[in-house]
Length: 274
Image 1 (cartoon, helix red, strand yellow):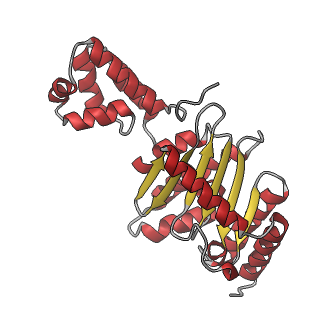
Image 2 (cartoon, one colour):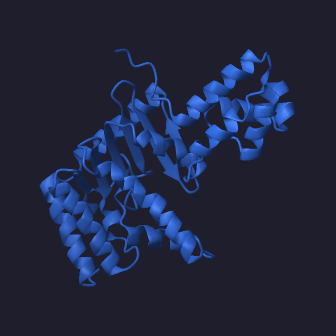
Image 3 (cartoon, rainbow, N blue to C red):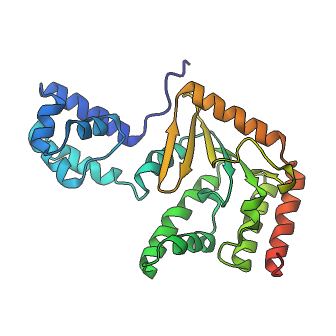
């Protein structure tokens, strides 16, 4: 079967239905934006699945199109707990058959333990409450369910050794986190490789990277920075990302050597060694 584009996410289906209903009502994006009290550009974002309307916007869309609460009700099922730049990625993660991730400075979210995730959130939420941290941890660690049961997706994780050495949450938290990663690798649920510090410069030094492949759609690549992320489906950019991943992987330790290094790092953390 021909692969025309990446899988449609629920929010993209929402946007497509909005475009169909707007067109059927013989209304332009500009006309709808006047009724919704927003910019035509925002309507374009809604229809492309890049943004979701706020609940009051969805209610005004229903009023303008005469859709009897259709878009407001659907929105309740689509509101994401994730940041806007990651929401689509979280949806695609559930559909992927292969996930290849590179961790530069921290353990990827899908592999994080509760205590590791809590330490990360505490580090950049100075005015947090215990309830807010609990909710953030649940949302983050719920992603690990894709590793339960079914062998899909196949998950590869390539670590820069720096991510294993940074003591997030203290020695016991790091020991627990690294043991979990090693356990997953030894159980055959995770393909694990480490780029040791001795490698020096490598092809992925500038950013974390996640590659996702799908059964009947072309692959995508995702890079993330502070409070931002970029999901790429342009074939040239995705191909370049795959090449960089392959180059970095060629400099990494074997799975057996990588598991041994992760176990050793866990022991060092557990015993308070640097």
